[in-house]
Image 1 (tube, rainbow, N blue to C red):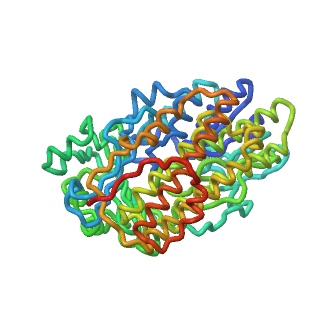
Image 2 (cartoon, one colour; image 1 turned 60 degrees about the vertical axis):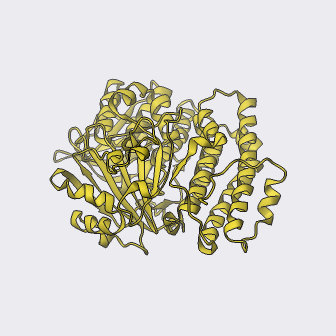
Length: 529
């Protein structure tokens, strides 16, 4: 037996969540000793590695600003052209479907990440900053205690690593989650299959329609996270910096079982029925296939991720909601903020059990409220009328409430949460009610057609939410901004409910009108004549 030197923080897993946490801890606690144990030996392959390449505003801010990686993102990754949705089930031409997106890039930057090259960069950066990264390590057992112990095999030799803090960043292996019996079935059952091809999918050139191409300037729809949507499913198209493209199918397990698309040939046949434009392009690229994988169970929950006993879970080792809206990096950012704060307080001489409980409650409230965006909602993906409204709401809630807290570095400000408790709780309840409304609208509404092109930048209030995400706000101003944004959400709820009632008069909207009150209603997209 060889006993390595004990460390302050022992991180099991050197992927995205673990390496980001190590870098964040180094910045906050420069004298801390940090060791990362990673199973993989050597660099990750660039273009065929892990799913999860798209970032949204919280995760993008975390990588660029919190971790200080903006130069790498700008030079080595792809600046994203926002989210883009095509309601195109069975449609051979994307220009003949309803498209929801932006015509120009929004001011708040997000990026498409090539996970292999990005994680290799993080590993080099961690070693440059004095973080001990040990690769080709097979973890055999975890022994939480004082201190924590990790039994691991290094090239046939067993070693016991000890740490004051133990963080599980082992991904879907979820070693602590399984050991402590923390996993929970949260009722969201989806499956997925994905592939990468060594070719760029130039969506703007799929259709011989100059007018359609010219709706977006520059004509670079391929830089978006493109969603091809239909009843019970959606398909992602994400470009990678190497020139490869990532494609994934995500579906409600009851409506579209994974067995229908769990190989390249099955996926191609499935896409031929549901998304023929994409199937046609992939059929031309059979020889460019880099990898293919699938999961029957994509989403999983976890009852606890932080403990005053000096252990924590981060990333998919704890929970994973859904790839839609790309929340994975966001929850890494949120979780790592709480872990870093707890470790810093402990190493500063005070293990704050009260803060650990509060952080746990806040993290789970964010997670459970976000879960309501997905659970029971996949049938709506084929309904352009309802989904365009839902996307506006989901973005507004995200940009209006979650982003000011995370991007404004307020996640650990317990005084702020105490002051805003009633308003934030009301906003969370309103979000859940709106998700119920969208389901009822889809189930009962006699859906009207939507125009072929819906530009989110035409909605001034929507563009303004994005433009103000990086405003620097003091304590008073951040409270005022959250009050203002929550007021907007109440008005938006009323406007969307009235829109739903025009399609389905039997939907009761009296309570939504009461919530909206006399507030001016924000503009919405108009239905087609």
